[in-house]
Length: 230
Figure 1 (cartoon, one colour):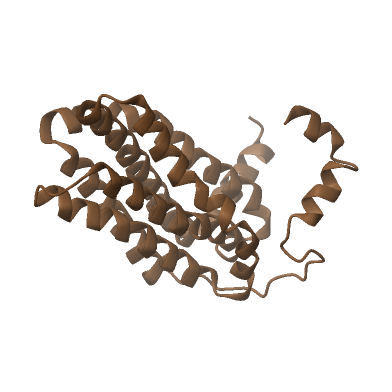
Figure 2 (tube, rainbow, N blue to C red):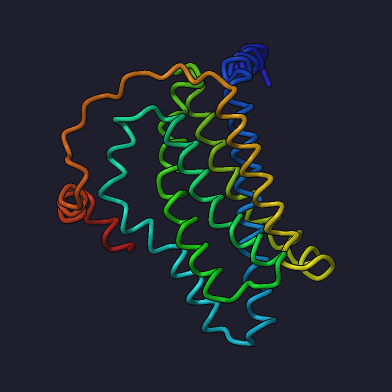
């Protein structure tokens, strides 16, 4: 690497700053906890019910909210990103907390986990885009590409570590262990978002109204190649 390249890399590292790195680390930890919890729940459900159908139900129920609330996500730009992130994490964690309490008191049933997954999906559907929108408020413009790259790395890390950690935790300590880890990582994310100043910036004006019309217009026009891939 040349001296100029090294200096550029060093500048990028500085521009990311402690604020972004702290929020990113806490959000990545929370993502790992949620992935671990989701896989652990799947393992537990299959062991308890012996039914692969229940696994499909849990996955579907957890992902339906992202479709249902899509038209409402446009309101993220009208509220402080940090507020939406904290609110989304609190909502998502509430389902897990209730499931944990029911598991500890030995009253947990399969439908409870489905309900918890639905609630968690609602919180995540708002929290995730809010975090993406908050990144420009946490880094300088020159470091935005690197910050977005790290954001993509977080979920990928969860996909890798989730199965590795979830299976032994459920086998050794039961479902309560993965639920407790999920709640704890949610707590770290919320506390970090509360402590770190975001430096909110006004949202740029947008032409679309948050409906599906803009997406359909794009897919039937310049984005036709993407439609073919889909």
